[in-house]
Length: 312
Image (tube, rainbow, N blue to C red):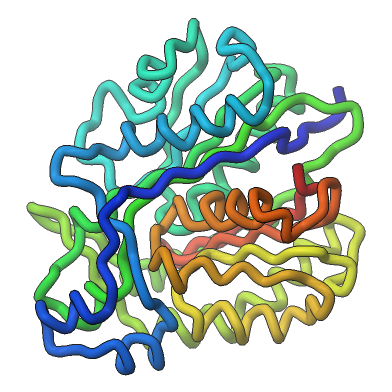
């Protein structure tokens, strides 16, 4: 096999929905203030006893069911997350146990909001190297557990959930070359630190970096895939903030693409945001099977990673 492709997707969101009016009863904010600044209307919050691996396993089970593969086919599980509290067993091993997988390699990756696209590239490289044949690649976050619910600048952003992809070996590559990197000296612009850990960021720094520096990198991703932005049928950026998503997509020039805007109903779910949004687009039939879709994650560490995939 000369590459890999995304065979199927799945997603999960907790039942509890927190809307902007609910937040306005908790902190000094309003529906108009939130929507005008970040575009978010609602977000889903996990139960107190609902864990990252529980949500990850729910999304993965749906992706597996959509793939038609047997449990025994999966030989690699990667979970991208920055909100797992427990260190061992890691989230990937816990997901494997919940699903009843046999003997997969299990690894967690913490690249914050760019975690899923890093994990997808890692799965693609592993399959290309012949070290795996079928992988579960999952982004899952319980961001609410790291949220300061008294800080109106950050608590309006965060949500919980998970998205998953089944990635398999293919004769014709369906996952394009990754373009990835970071700006380590500016990594402190997004932080999840302390005991208990709390999310904080320098919002204007992140906004300027994302809207200024990321569009040329996203165009490079397309070039590496042998496409122009006009060829894209879909664009799924990290669902951070509608005021970042829309200008980045506009500067990219993907004039024929469906632009994912799941942030409006899901908030910022960090590593879960790209697979969650992509799974919904596919489930609703908004992007045709086989069509090229740009996935581009960015955020914590001021890291970024993107690739063009063929839509399952």
